Length: 264
Image (tube, rainbow, N blue to C red; front, side, top):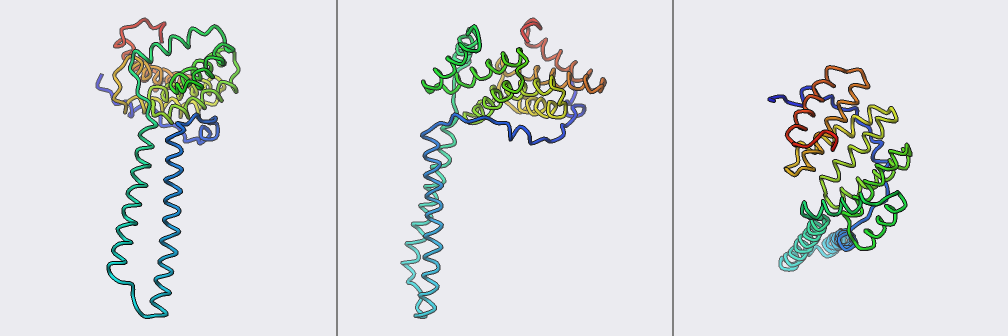
């Protein structure tokens, strides 16, 4: 449409409440162990360098004889190699957090979890996913459970579940699930009347959708949901001009999805 969303989407008032609401994480154990080991190596290396620098200083002060060039060179080489090894381990560990699945695998998981008849069944399914090491399945189960709790007006429980899902989605670097968690949390805050926080979450979701290179149906749908959420907040705030602009964009994006509005 030639419209720049940033020109009319109201930047939210920053609120760090979401940082305090995050639930417990479901880490990738091997990667976390390597990260911890790397930090331990860094700390040990720092202590050793400090101690030996002090030793060199005392040696020079009392003997007036500096350490030999080859001795210093060998130690410098060892320290450089150690730092390089630690940094490499950290980078590899971070990359291994990412969980890659195909669109079909995601759809299959989503269908299985949505078929759970009630929250108790979802709870069982959630722990099965966790025991099997299926991190994405665990995140999707949290998302579905949060929605059902919200529909029953159990907002505090829903916020806790969605916040945990957001943290886990960040751990596995799953943008689609991060955006959905942000939108779900924003919807709950809007229903609770905490509009500044609701705007913050929907705006973050929209921004992440805009910056993502994902072209799947779910990725495009996430953008529509983000715009709808922002538009609904602006309507509640009485900012009808902004609401009209954002909701028109959402409607246009929804047409490109070529699906009935009921599915959104």
